[in-house]
Structures are given as C-alpha cells and as structure tokens.
Length: 148
Ligand code: HEM
Image (cartoon, rainbow, N blue to C red; front, side, top):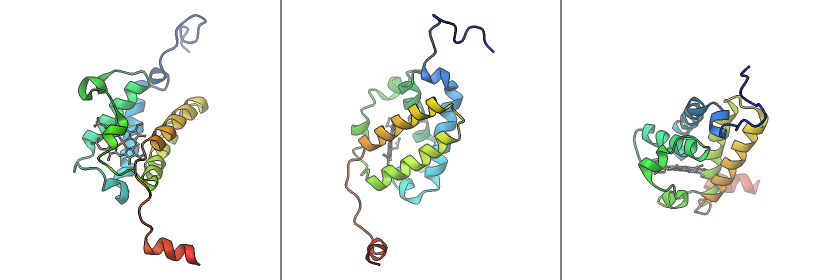
C-alpha cells in the first residue's frame, strides 16, 4: 500500500489517474472498437477503412475529458462533439449500439463500483446528447414482428 495516497490533505489524482491512466483508456477504447468492427450497422458509419485513427481520436478525447493529457485539443482543437457528429446520422438505434459496445468494454476494465458508475453515467448522457436523427424507417421484418 502506498503511504502517500489517501493521506488527509494530499490532493487526489484526477479520475484519469485513479482508474489507471493511459493503459486503462487504451483498453477501454480498444474493447469498444473491437465491438464496432463486429457490428455491421455501426461499422458502416465510419468513413475510414482503418479504425485505428478513430480509436486514437476517441481515446485522446476521453483521456482529456477525465483529467489526462490535453493531446486531443492540441491535435484536434475544441472538441465540439455535436458539430463533429453532424456529418453522421446518429439515430437512437446507433446510439444504443454504440453504448452496448462501450458499456461492455467498461465492464471489462474491473473498475471499482463508484468509478464505473461515474464513467457509465457520463457515456450514457453524452451518447444521448449526440443523437441527431430520428429512427430509421422500420424494416419489413420490424413491421411483421409488431403485427403478430
Ligand atoms: C451515440 C453514438 C455515437 C456514434 C454513432 C458515433 C459515431 C462517430 C463517428 C462515425 C465518428 C467519426 C470517426 C472518426 O473519424 O473519428 C465519430 C467521431 C468521434 N466521436 Fe463519436 N459517436 C457516438 C457517440 C460518441 C460519444 C458519446 C462520444 C464521447 C463521449 C464520442 C466521441 C467522438 C470523438 C471524440 C470523435 C472524433 C472527433 C474528431 O476529433 O474528429 N462519440 N463518432
């Protein structure tokens, strides 16, 4: 046990530090993009053949948001997340798929309960905030499922 961490009067690290810093965010975002790679609906939204650069952008953003290095803003400027998602039609279905992969990855990190709850709460709110298009037209199979 460290004798410095948790002493009264010692400043606590940022959330980024407390959850394990860079390695934790690498694992979080890698797990998420593994989910995206296997999800045809979401995968079709990502313009680049290689998901690697998108993985780095999302990781840098989340690291910065939670108190890690400011590399995202140095490289990309102000986040303006809604504006940056405007070229993509983010429907409720895509939000839910995004969240399913992200929350599965969060669950694999082994964070303590409160840390996990904070991260999940933020991700859910951010994903809901970024929806910018109504649900796709129902498919024939949706209509059949609803009519029985
Ligand atoms: C709601 C479902 C979401 C969908 C379908 C979605 C989809 C996308 C797509 C297709 C891109 C472009 C890939 C790229 O070039 O980087 C992107 C970029 C990005 N997304 Fe999302 N996203 C969602 C939610 C979120 C959330 C909740 C966050 C943050 C908590 C986020 C943060 C970012 C960031 C930081 C970028 C890169 C922006 C840049 O610097 O160009 N996204 N997203």
